[in-house]
Image (tube, rainbow, N blue to C red):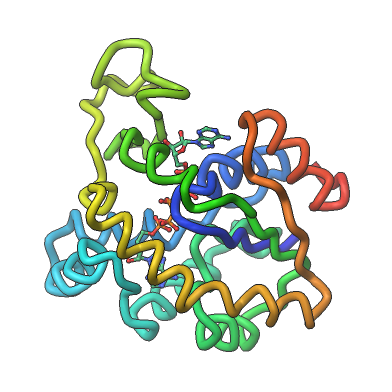
Length: 211
Ligand code: AP5
């Protein structure tokens, strides 16, 4: 199954993509995680990407497309994949259509006002990419990843002022994709408010009970 998760920052795409990918036995491909690895490498490309990410803007399309194309060529993606964070504008949707055909696009519908708290309270493990939330899913030991003991960090783009810019980018660039995929007949909407388990079962239904 080839699936893309689309929704505003903090909608829970990453949280649900990890669960669905595990259930389906296919890879979770997050362009945000891939870009953060490039940034961590300190390469000139990473420095370029970082300036866009920390301003809440999209990284230029060609850079992200090259990265994604390479990732989709890896053997595990031939069984299917969950794309998390790609596509993010109409040009990326078009570019993706030349690489692969999506079976489903799941739209995570949630009001932006609910998301600021989720994002500013999020902490992530820079090593294993596990995600915690100081309010809703705190780590067992404060500031430490439950899985590998690494010190948790706050993503630089989860600062309140950057979060606002990310919402604006989402509304301007990503929202038009919903109509594009609705017309293609692959869009399914999941209400992304409520608990993680509740949303997981809605995602399962939206994927046609495939998990
Ligand atoms: P990216 O990493 O993709 O960020 P995003 O789309 O803004 O989404 P987030 O990771 O912030 O949120 P999420 O929906 O995954 O929520 P999560 O599950 O973590 O992109 C970052 C940047 O990279 C972009 O701004 C851009 O610059 C660049 N980029 C990436 N892809 C690109 C592309 N294709 N083109 C160009 N640039 C690109 O959950 C959030 C929090 O809420 C967590 O703390 C979690 O524990 C908690 N939570 C989850 N579910 C629930 C629930 N049901 N109830 C309560 N809390 C919950």
